[in-house]
Image 1 (tube, rainbow, N blue to C red):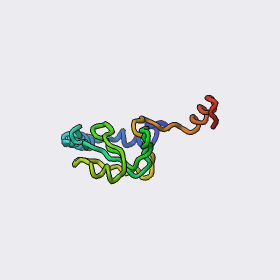
Image 2 (image 1 turned 45 degrees about the vertical axis):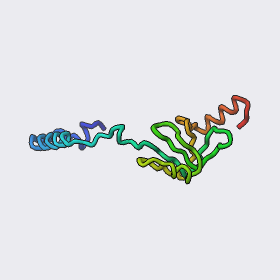
Image 3 (image 1 turned 135 degrees about the horizontal axis):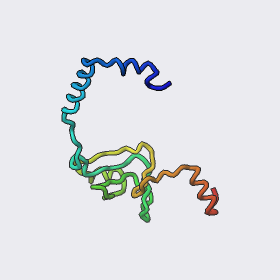
Length: 126
């Protein structure tokens, strides 16, 4: 059933001038409300990730407890206590809740069926 044949057609076709003006007034008032603009200055200077396995590519420190990111760059990696002792004043703490973090990777998730297919094609097994 199309939109104009259904029950919504009565509502659309029976708009009164009063209801139209009410709706336009509400819309204009809503548009006039100033919204708080988020700027780059409101972002924290440092983000500390902890609470899950954090895999690095550094020899001798393949897995750490915490990592600090300052202005988009990894600034420190090590134990949670060590990183929290060095944290900045405007810091965002992110608990990974057991999820694995791979620093430096973007969109590291790969669907499992693709991984099996690619490993089978390369002869490395599944």
